[in-house]
Length: 277
Image (cartoon, rainbow, N blue to C red; front, side, top):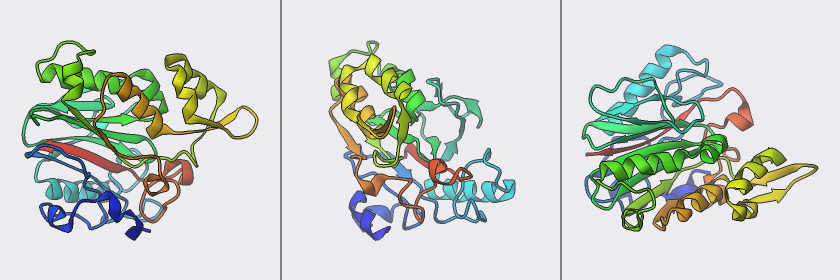
Protein backbone atom coordinates (compact mmCIF):
# COMPACT_ATOMS: atom_id res chain seq x y z
CA UNK A 1 0.00 0.00 0.00
CA UNK A 2 2.72 2.49 0.94
CA UNK A 3 4.79 1.31 -2.00
CA UNK A 4 2.00 2.57 -4.23
CA UNK A 5 2.49 6.09 -2.84
CA UNK A 6 6.16 6.50 -3.72
CA UNK A 7 5.13 8.64 -6.68
CA UNK A 8 4.00 11.28 -4.17
CA UNK A 9 7.55 11.67 -2.85
CA UNK A 10 10.71 13.23 -4.26
CA UNK A 11 13.96 11.34 -4.60
CA UNK A 12 15.38 9.43 -1.58
CA UNK A 13 18.27 11.89 -1.48
CA UNK A 14 15.85 14.72 -0.69
CA UNK A 15 14.26 12.72 2.13
CA UNK A 16 17.55 12.20 3.95
CA UNK A 17 17.62 15.89 4.88
CA UNK A 18 15.15 15.10 7.67
CA UNK A 19 15.18 12.47 10.40
CA UNK A 20 11.79 11.03 9.63
CA UNK A 21 9.85 7.82 9.25
CA UNK A 22 10.12 6.39 5.75
CA UNK A 23 6.35 6.58 5.23
CA UNK A 24 6.01 10.31 5.90
CA UNK A 25 5.29 12.49 2.89
CA UNK A 26 7.63 15.23 1.73
CA UNK A 27 5.72 17.42 -0.72
CA UNK A 28 7.00 17.17 -4.27
CA UNK A 29 6.61 20.82 -5.24
CA UNK A 30 8.96 23.61 -6.35
CA UNK A 31 9.16 25.37 -2.99
CA UNK A 32 12.09 27.80 -2.76
CA UNK A 33 15.32 26.92 -1.01
CA UNK A 34 14.93 27.39 2.72
CA UNK A 35 11.28 26.30 2.84
CA UNK A 36 10.71 22.81 4.24
CA UNK A 37 7.49 20.84 4.57
CA UNK A 38 6.17 17.40 5.43
CA UNK A 39 3.03 15.49 6.24
CA UNK A 40 3.15 12.62 8.70
CA UNK A 41 1.30 9.34 8.33
CA UNK A 42 0.04 7.17 11.19
CA UNK A 43 3.37 5.30 11.27
CA UNK A 44 6.39 5.93 13.45
CA UNK A 45 4.97 6.66 16.92
CA UNK A 46 4.21 4.94 20.22
CA UNK A 47 0.42 5.24 20.64
CA UNK A 48 -1.56 2.06 21.33
CA UNK A 49 -4.73 0.95 19.54
CA UNK A 50 -7.04 2.43 18.38
CA UNK A 51 -4.58 5.31 17.88
CA UNK A 52 -1.83 2.94 16.82
CA UNK A 53 1.25 4.78 15.70
CA UNK A 54 2.04 8.46 15.51
CA UNK A 55 -1.08 10.12 16.91
CA UNK A 56 -0.36 13.83 17.38
CA UNK A 57 -3.80 14.89 18.62
CA UNK A 58 -4.22 15.63 22.32
CA UNK A 59 -8.02 15.88 22.11
CA UNK A 60 -8.96 12.41 20.84
CA UNK A 61 -8.70 10.32 24.03
CA UNK A 62 -5.18 8.95 23.59
CA UNK A 63 -2.73 8.59 26.49
CA UNK A 64 -1.23 12.08 27.07
CA UNK A 65 2.23 10.62 27.59
CA UNK A 66 2.13 8.84 24.25
CA UNK A 67 1.01 12.01 22.47
CA UNK A 68 3.77 14.01 24.13
CA UNK A 69 6.32 11.42 23.01
CA UNK A 70 4.95 11.49 19.46
CA UNK A 71 5.10 15.27 19.37
CA UNK A 72 8.70 15.15 20.55
CA UNK A 73 9.51 12.77 17.68
CA UNK A 74 7.97 15.24 15.24
CA UNK A 75 9.90 18.15 16.69
CA UNK A 76 13.13 16.17 16.42
CA UNK A 77 12.38 15.45 12.77
CA UNK A 78 11.64 19.07 11.96
CA UNK A 79 14.50 20.53 14.04
CA UNK A 80 12.13 23.45 14.71
CA UNK A 81 9.08 23.85 16.96
CA UNK A 82 5.74 22.80 15.47
CA UNK A 83 3.05 25.14 16.78
CA UNK A 84 -0.19 23.24 17.35
CA UNK A 85 -3.56 24.97 17.12
CA UNK A 86 -6.97 24.32 18.67
CA UNK A 87 -8.83 23.74 15.42
CA UNK A 88 -12.57 24.44 15.31
CA UNK A 89 -13.44 24.13 11.58
CA UNK A 90 -13.45 27.90 11.23
CA UNK A 91 -11.49 30.51 9.28
CA UNK A 92 -9.40 32.15 12.01
CA UNK A 93 -5.72 32.57 11.13
CA UNK A 94 -3.00 32.84 13.78
CA UNK A 95 0.15 34.83 13.15
CA UNK A 96 3.07 33.00 14.73
CA UNK A 97 6.16 34.39 16.44
CA UNK A 98 8.46 32.82 19.00
CA UNK A 99 6.08 33.73 21.84
CA UNK A 100 3.19 31.89 20.20
CA UNK A 101 1.78 29.19 22.51
CA UNK A 102 0.24 25.93 21.46
CA UNK A 103 -3.54 25.81 21.63
CA UNK A 104 -4.53 29.08 19.97
CA UNK A 105 -8.05 28.83 18.56
CA UNK A 106 -7.48 28.94 14.80
CA UNK A 107 -7.61 26.73 11.75
CA UNK A 108 -4.58 28.18 10.01
CA UNK A 109 -1.31 29.87 10.83
CA UNK A 110 1.19 32.10 9.05
CA UNK A 111 4.76 33.06 9.92
CA UNK A 112 7.83 34.78 8.60
CA UNK A 113 9.92 33.54 11.52
CA UNK A 114 12.53 30.80 11.33
CA UNK A 115 12.47 28.12 14.00
CA UNK A 116 8.67 27.66 13.92
CA UNK A 117 6.56 25.31 11.86
CA UNK A 118 3.01 26.22 10.87
CA UNK A 119 1.19 22.99 11.70
CA UNK A 120 -2.31 21.60 11.21
CA UNK A 121 -3.72 18.27 12.38
CA UNK A 122 -5.92 16.18 10.11
CA UNK A 123 -7.73 12.85 9.90
CA UNK A 124 -9.84 13.29 6.71
CA UNK A 125 -9.86 17.09 6.42
CA UNK A 126 -7.57 18.60 3.80
CA UNK A 127 -4.21 20.03 4.92
CA UNK A 128 -3.09 22.96 2.75
CA UNK A 129 0.47 24.29 2.80
CA UNK A 130 1.37 27.63 1.23
CA UNK A 131 4.40 29.76 0.50
CA UNK A 132 5.61 32.32 -2.00
CA UNK A 133 8.36 32.04 -4.57
CA UNK A 134 10.54 34.24 -2.37
CA UNK A 135 10.08 31.85 0.57
CA UNK A 136 9.87 34.72 3.07
CA UNK A 137 6.53 33.59 4.49
CA UNK A 138 4.82 30.20 4.99
CA UNK A 139 1.34 29.11 6.02
CA UNK A 140 -0.70 26.01 6.81
CA UNK A 141 -4.49 25.66 6.77
CA UNK A 142 -6.93 23.00 7.99
CA UNK A 143 -9.70 22.73 5.40
CA UNK A 144 -12.63 20.49 6.11
CA UNK A 145 -15.80 21.29 4.20
CA UNK A 146 -17.01 23.78 6.82
CA UNK A 147 -13.74 25.69 6.88
CA UNK A 148 -13.43 25.57 3.12
CA UNK A 149 -16.95 26.94 2.63
CA UNK A 150 -16.30 29.45 5.42
CA UNK A 151 -13.29 30.97 3.67
CA UNK A 152 -10.31 29.54 5.53
CA UNK A 153 -8.17 29.43 2.37
CA UNK A 154 -9.01 33.02 1.45
CA UNK A 155 -8.31 34.21 5.00
CA UNK A 156 -4.98 32.39 5.09
CA UNK A 157 -3.91 33.76 1.72
CA UNK A 158 -4.86 37.25 2.79
CA UNK A 159 -2.51 36.95 5.77
CA UNK A 160 0.20 35.32 3.66
CA UNK A 161 0.07 38.13 1.13
CA UNK A 162 0.01 40.84 3.80
CA UNK A 163 3.15 39.34 5.30
CA UNK A 164 4.63 39.54 1.81
CA UNK A 165 3.74 43.23 1.59
CA UNK A 166 0.67 42.80 -0.65
CA UNK A 167 -2.52 44.47 0.57
CA UNK A 168 -5.14 43.35 -1.94
CA UNK A 169 -6.63 39.83 -1.88
CA UNK A 170 -7.31 40.13 -5.61
CA UNK A 171 -3.74 41.10 -6.53
CA UNK A 172 -2.82 39.11 -9.64
CA UNK A 173 0.88 39.53 -8.94
CA UNK A 174 0.52 37.98 -5.48
CA UNK A 175 -1.42 35.02 -6.87
CA UNK A 176 1.27 34.41 -9.47
CA UNK A 177 3.90 34.28 -6.72
CA UNK A 178 1.97 31.80 -4.56
CA UNK A 179 2.61 28.07 -4.31
CA UNK A 180 0.12 25.68 -2.69
CA UNK A 181 0.36 22.00 -1.76
CA UNK A 182 -2.70 19.90 -0.95
CA UNK A 183 -2.13 16.91 1.33
CA UNK A 184 -4.00 13.63 1.85
CA UNK A 185 -7.67 13.78 2.80
CA UNK A 186 -10.92 11.87 2.43
CA UNK A 187 -11.29 11.07 -1.26
CA UNK A 188 -14.25 11.68 -3.57
CA UNK A 189 -15.04 7.96 -3.58
CA UNK A 190 -15.62 8.04 0.20
CA UNK A 191 -16.87 11.52 1.16
CA UNK A 192 -20.65 11.24 1.28
CA UNK A 193 -22.42 14.49 2.14
CA UNK A 194 -25.96 15.81 2.18
CA UNK A 195 -27.65 18.23 -0.19
CA UNK A 196 -27.02 21.05 2.30
CA UNK A 197 -23.25 20.75 1.82
CA UNK A 198 -23.57 20.82 -1.95
CA UNK A 199 -25.89 23.83 -1.75
CA UNK A 200 -23.42 25.72 0.46
CA UNK A 201 -20.65 25.40 -2.13
CA UNK A 202 -22.78 25.95 -5.22
CA UNK A 203 -24.11 29.17 -3.69
CA UNK A 204 -20.51 30.40 -3.51
CA UNK A 205 -19.37 29.07 -6.90
CA UNK A 206 -21.83 27.59 -9.41
CA UNK A 207 -19.05 25.45 -10.92
CA UNK A 208 -18.75 23.66 -7.58
CA UNK A 209 -21.56 21.40 -8.77
CA UNK A 210 -18.92 19.57 -10.82
CA UNK A 211 -17.35 18.35 -7.55
CA UNK A 212 -20.50 16.53 -6.39
CA UNK A 213 -21.80 13.24 -7.79
CA UNK A 214 -25.28 11.93 -6.84
CA UNK A 215 -25.12 9.01 -4.42
CA UNK A 216 -28.60 8.05 -3.32
CA UNK A 217 -31.53 10.17 -2.20
CA UNK A 218 -30.31 13.69 -1.37
CA UNK A 219 -26.76 12.37 -0.97
CA UNK A 220 -23.64 13.18 -2.92
CA UNK A 221 -19.99 12.15 -3.12
CA UNK A 222 -17.90 15.29 -2.70
CA UNK A 223 -14.46 16.01 -4.12
CA UNK A 224 -12.84 17.99 -1.29
CA UNK A 225 -9.47 18.63 -2.99
CA UNK A 226 -11.34 19.55 -6.17
CA UNK A 227 -13.36 22.14 -4.26
CA UNK A 228 -10.16 23.54 -2.76
CA UNK A 229 -8.60 23.84 -6.22
CA UNK A 230 -11.64 25.74 -7.45
CA UNK A 231 -11.43 28.21 -4.56
CA UNK A 232 -7.71 28.74 -5.17
CA UNK A 233 -8.08 29.09 -8.92
CA UNK A 234 -10.82 31.68 -8.41
CA UNK A 235 -8.16 33.81 -6.70
CA UNK A 236 -5.84 33.44 -9.68
CA UNK A 237 -3.60 30.77 -8.17
CA UNK A 238 -2.42 28.21 -10.69
CA UNK A 239 0.65 26.75 -8.96
CA UNK A 240 -1.23 24.04 -7.04
CA UNK A 241 0.45 20.71 -6.28
CA UNK A 242 -0.21 17.49 -4.41
CA UNK A 243 -3.60 15.86 -3.95
CA UNK A 244 -5.29 15.30 -7.32
CA UNK A 245 -8.24 13.37 -5.81
CA UNK A 246 -6.83 10.01 -6.90
CA UNK A 247 -7.11 6.99 -4.62
CA UNK A 248 -3.47 7.25 -3.48
CA UNK A 249 -4.36 10.39 -1.52
CA UNK A 250 -7.50 9.05 0.18
CA UNK A 251 -7.23 8.74 3.96
CA UNK A 252 -10.31 6.52 4.28
CA UNK A 253 -9.19 3.82 1.86
CA UNK A 254 -5.72 3.28 3.35
CA UNK A 255 -6.04 2.29 7.01
CA UNK A 256 -2.44 1.07 7.27
CA UNK A 257 -1.10 4.48 6.26
CA UNK A 258 -3.57 7.15 7.33
CA UNK A 259 -5.79 8.02 10.25
CA UNK A 260 -9.43 8.57 9.27
CA UNK A 261 -12.17 9.83 11.55
CA UNK A 262 -14.86 9.03 8.97
CA UNK A 263 -13.67 5.42 8.75
CA UNK A 264 -12.85 4.69 12.40
CA UNK A 265 -14.72 7.33 14.44
CA UNK A 266 -12.08 6.95 17.18
CA UNK A 267 -8.94 8.06 15.40
CA UNK A 268 -5.58 9.69 15.82
CA UNK A 269 -4.40 12.79 13.96
CA UNK A 270 -1.62 13.39 11.43
CA UNK A 271 0.29 16.64 11.02
CA UNK A 272 1.13 18.74 7.99
CA UNK A 273 3.93 21.23 8.65
CA UNK A 274 5.75 23.98 6.77
CA UNK A 275 8.63 26.09 8.02
CA UNK A 276 11.56 28.29 7.07
CA UNK A 277 14.83 26.49 7.69
